[in-house]
Structures are given as structure tokens and as C-alpha cells.
Length: 126
Image (cartoon, helix red, strand yellow):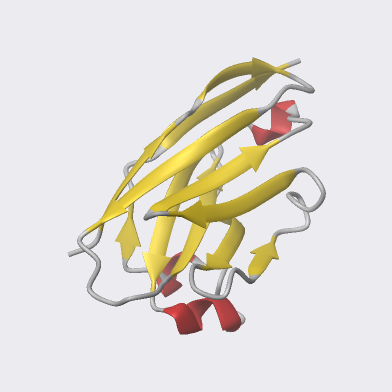
């Protein structure tokens, strides 16, 4: 059973940076598609970025391109967030599933992932 634990959330002013981490354990397969999602108050959970942990290929939502960077190393997933905006305020979740998910049109959909962390709050003030 894959377990995911996020950390690194917090409060920051607009224009600032944060780095989120997601520690993964209990892998069944050698490689995974891992992703970051976020859910703002009153809104649906949305995909932010995904990575094939073996190949290093990455995918980004338009809202994240140029500001966020997803990466992974030694069973830990990261999301470096720069130039943060108040609209980035949300609970951020990491997710994992089989590698093929990254290469499908579903990489940013909730239903594509079976494993989820508990989330970490990010608050960006103006």
C-alpha cells in the first residue's frame, strides 16, 4: 500500500516562494506517475503538475507553467512554487498511480489516481 505524506505548506506573501514535499513509501511498483493537485475553498480539486518518476517527463496545468516546478528524488516528490499569487491559495495534495497515467489525457483528473496524501495548506496573502 502506497503511503504519501505532504509537508512544506504555510503562509507567504504574494510574489514569494514555497517548496512542497511528499514523502512516499510502500511502493508496489518500481516507477509511478506522481502528481500535485490543489483544492481551493468552494472549488473542485484540480491537477497542477505530474511527473513520470523514472523518465523525469513532466506535465503542467496552464496556471502552473513558468512558475511551478515538479521534481522527484529518493522517494520524495517536490513542488517548487515561485511568484505565488493569492489565487494559488489552496490545500495541496500529492497523488500517485501507475506510470501510464502520466501519458494519458487523464493525468490531471482525480479519478486517475488511487493513492493520495492528506494535503498541506498553502496561503498566499496580497
